[in-house]
Image (cartoon, rainbow, N blue to C red; front, side, top):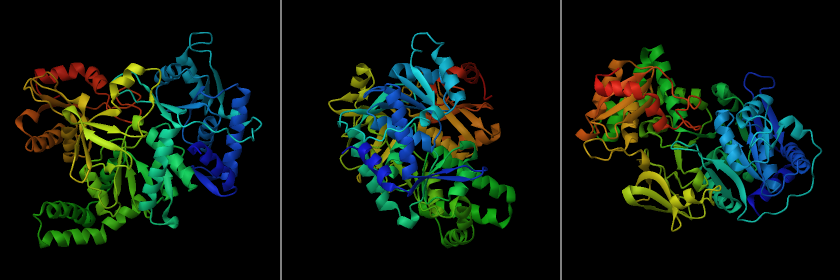
Length: 554
């Protein structure tokens, strides 16, 4: 039985058990519960609409909207109908979404509201234009349809259940085909991992805010539905802080930017307040560094003990009094941020993977988690290092291929091994550390190959108020870093001096450009999941960077 049939069965058998709670901070009511029966009714109505729309098995259906109970019901219903879900990021530029819809050959677009749909339709072209002949519908129309109460037909293991478009940091997005077999392999793994970490049924309160259109986010959703465990979801990312307080979860899935923002925010609040609390906090952090390095003494032990008694528990209470652990993916988390949460007694378990690997390749285990590393290979998955220490992986988690793009598929899957494009290290215990992207490697005129990510990470650690740091220098006389955020030239130079002191001569960053401009997905300088679009950034700041190479910092 496929995971889709399992999810459908769980909705049928849950009855009046609450499986989902929408958090609506600042609204009345602030929470909206959804039982299994209510979600099943939505899914059956969605299937009724798909019947009326003439959607057949294998047809692609684009789904555009923020996280909600309706989004979840549609996701399950489309797959149960035998069609293929093409999830779209509701905050992405319509012009980019239009490329995906056209490439997928979607027969139907379902949008949460008229504003989202009209933006996409405008980007797709006027009625009658090439590629504009697909049907579209809003949620209200879909869920106003009479339900189809028949049970979904079984699907084969090889059937494509979803096409998720990559973020396109190095070019045009490609549609990643995931099969029922891919997901059937992954969900028992994630379910088992949570079972080893969660402290009991009374501590199994999970909150989710990352958009379901991303692979890792979707795996978390399906895992909780498979477990029939209550899932609390964000409905407004602009009110995330208030929603987290209302949910008060035991754990939730994160990206590094969110955790680093929390650490930075706490430090700012304490600095603004000043006094003994700030003193205990800073001395505690410094003492922890010294003790970990083996240079600390009795005074450091006392300082750390005082911070753990009087400061760290209060910080944890403001972040989440019930938090037992956090899960972090999408990109490597800095060791400093991971250790900071450990001091608060909130362990962070990292997950590494790509859309092409059904979201997961490695996962931290409670007894092997190590700051700066992203865990060991999940059961059934093989790892090895290829040319240039590129990480290769093989197993049932590898995707079917890129939609209608056999050439691109052949480039990344060779002899059964998927080439991740990530440069990595694997220690004796099998713990993985991601060094950087192979394609991001740059060679200045010195002739040395250099990964920019470790330098950028070190600079952000040295000056946490930096929002983004982007190292450039391929084919140039030396390295330069572009810096954004609420920082001054003096602060950047001080941080740069500290980082350069730890680097060999060929990795030292000689100059910088500080910009007041914020890098965002909307500006085309970040991907939808907030990763750097390096080529676009270099082009956007071309004139400024040329000036830096010709003169001093600006």
